[in-house]
Length: 364
Image (cartoon, rainbow, N blue to C red; front, side, top):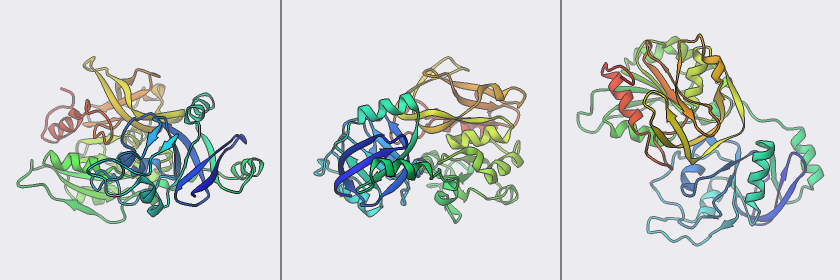
C-alpha cells in the first residue's frame, strides 16, 4: 500500500498518509498502544487479530526485525499506524526491515499521520471501526464500516490446530503444564519452559476429558483476541476442570477463568495497551508496572458469590487485574507477566504457579 493511503473512521473522519507494508484494503478495529519499544512483539501478538494499532511512540522501524522476538510465526494483526516509519534500520540483530516483514505477512501500514490526534480521538470516543484504503472516499468508507461488524471467530483462527509438546531441558522440575492456546504468545511457553516445565500446548476447544487424560500437574489458559464470551468451548472446559489441579490464566485466560465461575465481563472504552500500567497487589500492598493488551475486563460487582476474590487492581481506572479461587487453586491476571515487551515486575507469578503445582498454597 505504498503511496497515498487513507485511514477512514466509522464517523467519516479521514486521515491521509503514506503507505508501507502490504498493499491491501482492510476493515479493522482501531486501538492504540503506548509502548516505546517492542513493535515486533506487538505485530506478532495474536491478541491483536483484526486490529489496526496506533503507536503513540513516533519513530517506528528503527531497529528492524530480528529472528528471536516473534510471539507467533503467523501474525494476524491487521495494520500498524505510525507517525514516522524508518525504512533503514540500525541494529546488529536486524535481519530485515519492518516494511518487508509486513509485506510478507499481509500487514498494512500507514505513516505520516498525526498519531497524537488519532489517539486522543480514541480516548475521547472509544475504540472504533476503521478502513485503510487508497481509493474509497470518506462517505463511501463510512457506509462500508456501518455495514460491517467485528468477527467473532478470532480465537478459532489463531489457536493451534495440533497438540505440541515442549520437553524440559535436562530433568526439569517434574511439572507438566497443559497450555490451552487461545492465541498464546510464545514467550509464555518460553517462560514455563525456562522454569523447568514440560509444556503441552492444546487447541482452545480441547475438552476436559482429554486434558484430564494427559495427567497434567497444572493447566494454563492463554491470552488471545476478541470477546471472551465468544470462547464458549474453553469456558466450558475450564469450568469442568475446577479443582482438578492448579489453573493459571493470563489476559483472555483471566477473563475466561472469571466467566467459568459465573462472573461477567464487559468491553472497555479503549482498552489497556502498553508497558507502563500500574497495578496494586491487594494481598501484599506492592505495586507492579505491567505490560497490558486487552479490550475487555472482569466486572468487579459480578465477582461476589462466585468464590473468587480480587487480588490485583489497576490504579488508573480501578478495574480488576487479578482474581483467585483459593479452594480450587485457580488464579489469573489481566496483564502479561511474561512481558515481551514490557517490564518484568510480575515474573513472580510463574513461580507462584509452579509452587501451587508442588502443593504450596497460592499467595501463601
